[in-house]
Image 1 (tube, rainbow, N blue to C red):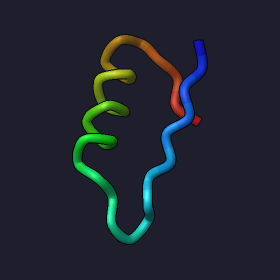
Image 2 (image 1 turned 120 degrees about the horizontal axis):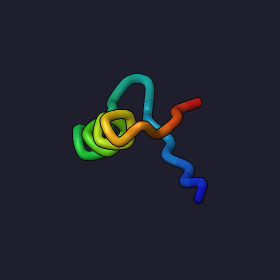
Image 3 (image 1 turned 60 degrees about the vertical axis):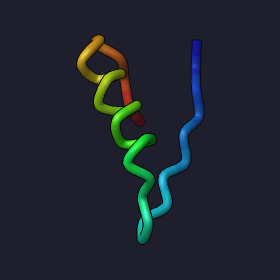
Length: 31
């Protein structure tokens, strides 16, 4: 399953960053 998360370069949302970190911890791929 693919999920698109857009992170604002100047004002990133902590919730979105945490979601990316959890995906990486589970062995997911971030592009």
